[in-house]
Image (cartoon, rainbow, N blue to C red):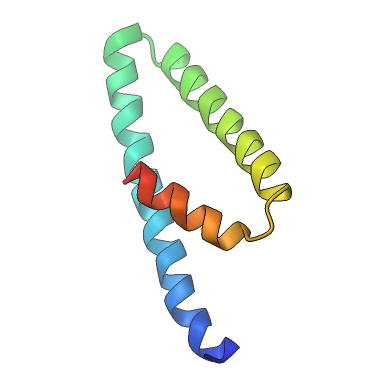
Length: 79
């Protein structure tokens, strides 16, 4: 398969993944607001967990020989 054929489906996968991530973020924020009863604490926890996930993902993918495959495994696992 050529590079030009792979790019549009891969872009669509990343788009759908980003949209579902934003939906999860809104759902978690609304749930955390009910737990903490204060929006500032809920947003702080959500942001801290998000940043920790970015750091962990960067650490793991930096040591991976096939980061695209690992990303797919994580996406399927989280679904």
